Length: 121
Image 1 (tube, helix red, strand yellow):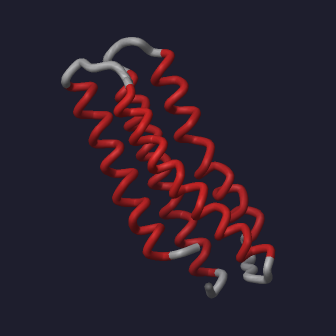
Image 2 (spheres, rainbow, N blue to C red; image 1 turned 90 degrees about the horizontal axis):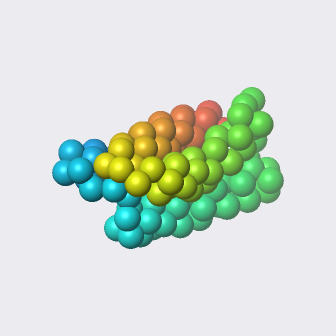
């Protein structure tokens, strides 16, 4: 894990959640701006996951290595799934789905940082 990137991801997932809540409050469905926002965050999540997995497989281990790898997988799958559900919902509630996905991914990133700290890396 790269700590500064994880902090950036925490900020961005929070911003994504706020964006989803605001667009829900304004009554706007999930559209192109949502796709672009999710895509930008997802690109950083994939980079972080690849780096984290590479470090684990190159020797950085903790007592919860399997849990760490599962969280890495979850971190890159939640937002695309949330976006799919949001785009399938043509009402204002698509933004709420993205907000929930953003919050969930933020929690996952927070947990990844905690697990990585126990790996001594």
